[in-house]
Length: 124
Image (cartoon, rainbow, N blue to C red; front, top):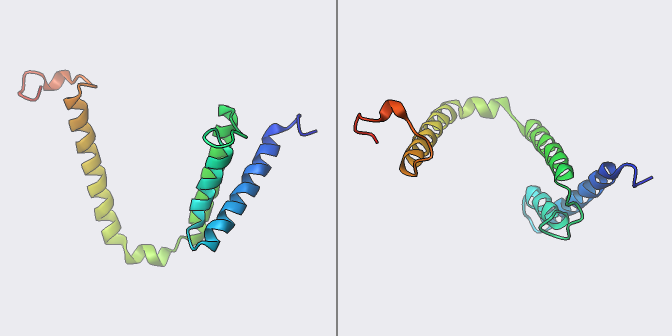
């Protein structure tokens, strides 16, 4: 029966290992997310390789992201967002601008992308 549905078995093992990792992290006064990451490292290819098929890892990773987004949504507070609205908007605009600038400079320096529009204008 287990051989017919390996994803279900691996999902059950991943969830139970993550729950145990979260419990251990909580006992050491650490965020549960640290325990979840440790559990993933333990059962994944970097650990005991219980789950080594890339398709299975991708499927479990997608479920993990869905669970993470659900947990964030449960803790999300509109009142808190309203309180930090101005700082959050300014910070996100600054972060996007600086990241775009850094990537643009890096691609020009290492010549990853050729920009014909910039050639002959002193940029390249």
